[in-house]
Image 1 (spheres, rainbow, N blue to C red):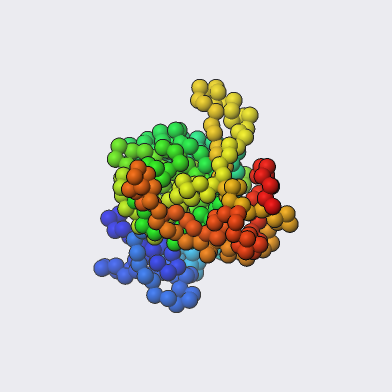
Image 2: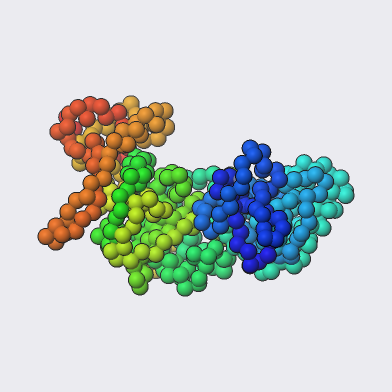
Length: 431
Ligand SMILES: [Zn+2]
Ligand SMILES: [Zn+2]
């Protein structure tokens, strides 16, 4: 592999592909040929998710790309896993990175020996160590965050949102690199400044369900400021949404429109020092994809920002009940010390004014029949509606049986949705 050649992955199994010969033939890493499909090479930059492994130890959740010596070793001792260790850019998991940073590279070798099941023969150790050293001795300073790793989901609560936002802004201002679309320092500074100003929104379970179903069928939308619940903002869904598994999104006002960014959570399943370091140095979120849109930009329904745009639209059409969350004392104090106004986190729930009664036997969490109750939303659809001055503008509004209102008795009776969470103020008489 040369520096000039773009990295490719297989569109079917999302594995990075190795190359053979000139001109190159793309081949699966040998341990992956199992189901016999032919590799379908696509440039890695087109994929949100890539099934990469740590090139040191085989861990399935690599966090960093390091650049070092060009290593051309092929599999040794029949250890298929090591065939990925080609080239000068290696993926490192958070644990290996921690050991490398602490100059404890013998621990990295231990991990490799264990992971590849090679048995702890001195010769095997020696060969692995050689391989690692060939790379690390020529390592160049810096590292790039891997944003394509499908980490197990991490739950982010509304109370944590200010801290999550601040850590992300700090990461954008820091020196660790990001892949192409967000690589430019200027862009990163702009996004960081936008995050400082951002309105913070936390979307509860039910609204997340609604937003996900609505996003699936989102029609083309003309972007303008009216769609957005704040000038700059960041929102977190209660769980990852859409097949892309997006957990958060931000929008930043720029000189010619807005920059929209989707995020995934990182660090799920880690603990101890590697987790602490990742939280400290990166935080909770990694940007997955980004798009720059301008005013009156026609955004097509099926694109990465659909979940964000659908959520905006649902909030704008007042399907939402927006309340303000309590902010931790510690967070309030640290903001006060920094002369910043206390952050406000707005919690977005399904609107209470739409006449659905809460169903007492169901709660917002731990509902055993979640898939069934969620099906309720599928029947909704988008319709274009006139709005604005002289009703000259059009924007999609989401029509669903639930949102039709209190007079629709049959629909009400069929409402088995665990609609309103127990924290919802229930002052109205719903019968
Ligand atoms: Zn494949
Ligand atoms: Zn590793």
